[in-house]
Length: 241
Image 1 (cartoon, rainbow, N blue to C red):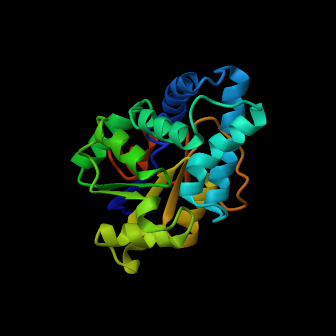
Image 2: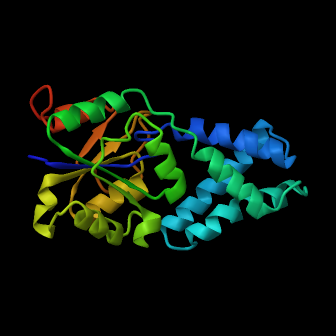
């Protein structure tokens, strides 16, 4: 398969989201007078992950998600924070936007793909001001032709609307689907979205998690550098991964 356009998910594909989250959350909780213990951090992550799953299914809006995760957290903990939930949310987003930590090999991969002539784009369900700040402050800042954020499109992955938006932003037509590959870590948003839209998918699965989607991605990889082999950079394309 000959690809010309590569769509990358951001968090946990190129960016080290847990590191950014821990950095922002620990400072936010401390400032708000909320105990920053392992149990509290885990409680937040459980609440946050469920809300993001709800967002993928269209059960909540992103505006609701921003504050609801902290509202549920303080309710579960049974405490009254120093700040209002809205203020806590805004402070967290500000600090999260500073988290420009990249996964190992992300910079080298994108640089080599760009130099090889591929058109690169990010397609993310993240919050616009957070993602734009993180990308702009990272080594990847000048490597993407488009940054597609769900907040701009009105749709979240796996909805086809966000892929329509991405194709329009990149000057692609429906007939160009065979030239596009999406690379992401999430089965339910990146891979399901790509499969449903009719483009090839590459599941970045560094920890060997089981596939619970009941659908097979086109490729599955453990290391980001393997993307180069799939698209013929530094060797022949392979479909056996």
